[in-house]
Image (cartoon, rainbow, N blue to C red):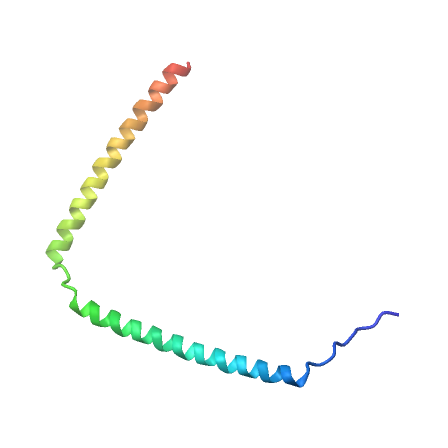
Length: 92
């Protein structure tokens, strides 16, 4: 008959190592959280220094980008159409 083997308990000296490791981990977590908080404070400070563009500048820049994207899309579409016709002629 097969039974379940119960492993022996940990020796007492290992429990102290485990507790020390838990305390060490808690310390690391505290330091990490404090570093993250400091980073976010610095980010907030830097964002206050940024000179953000006015609405008019943003609209103008966005419009230019959209026009250029449309022009390039049309150009690439025409090139693709032309090359596919050339390949069709060569293969037929």
